[in-house]
Image (cartoon, rainbow, N blue to C red; front, side, top):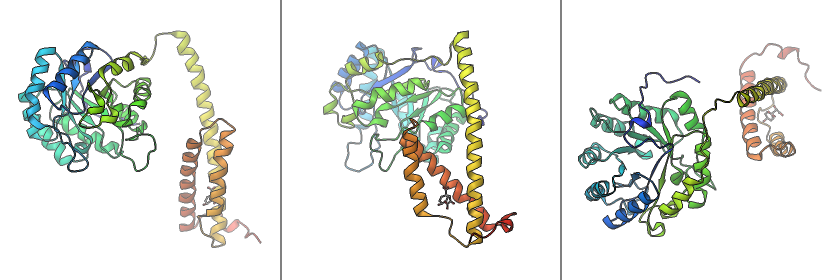
Length: 375
Ligand SMILES: O=C(O)C(=O)C[C@]1(C(=O)O)C=C[C@@H](O)C=C1
């Protein structure tokens, strides 16, 4: 995969938010009242958290939902920062938000998923950040579009922001039965591959939309070596004014973070390394075989395409495709392969079959004349 060039990025240890790894940013979805903020921050500090989040201006999908208390929350935030010595992160969606946040000494800014999708809005914010030395995090866009995410990061970075990171909050979906926003892990992993030194922070709260899944998503992020977590935590989650079902108390959050297994990127252990190298050699061998088998299948599909052309038969054969699509996951099950994985793989394979046969139909494929027309 090609790396993006020209990103000069500071590591989290240079952000001025402490050097504990992973970085945990925790706090209420929305700042509601001075009392709610004070009680939540006090409980978070007691559990060892020192970087707090809290929504001031809340972009909501539907009108008439609670849209945040607005700039009146900023003096309350300034008070808890002074009282508890915490750092504070908020979302900004316009140059006005940036100006106000900086005026009140906010330590970390983030762009929300609905802002990232809009290059005009991102550019306006980037322009307002010129000459400012504050960490800025960019959430993934609501749609699974890596280029759009990278584009927003580039705009912020080109404004001179070196303390830059990404937040993976999942992607909108039509009918994901499990997640509020599908994690689609391959997208943040591809981002990491393209911009290796970009810190990525996982947001299990917005991915899950419910409390019971938070720790499994947070653990997955740690297994994939994400640099941090941003988690919604409220002193009285059931009474939260927004996103009540995904917030947890600072106490529960403390337990969740303590229970995470933090993985090393690699270890200086020659035995481990040589064992992993052996396994990787086997994987290389199997991947070759896999590609050889796939190539054999495609050659057969091409042959079928040539016969279809000769006999003026349509490419898409619904009955046959149904049989293939229903039988393969069953074959896979007996080989301990996940049904969803097999289905997705065969969908891809079928798309390639159709593409290949289209090419044959459109062109005068050499050799087609040599085929005998079946009787
Ligand atoms: O069976 C065929 O007619 C094929 O061309 C093969 C194949 C496949 O890839 O399995 C491809 C296209 C059809 O829609 C059905 C099946």
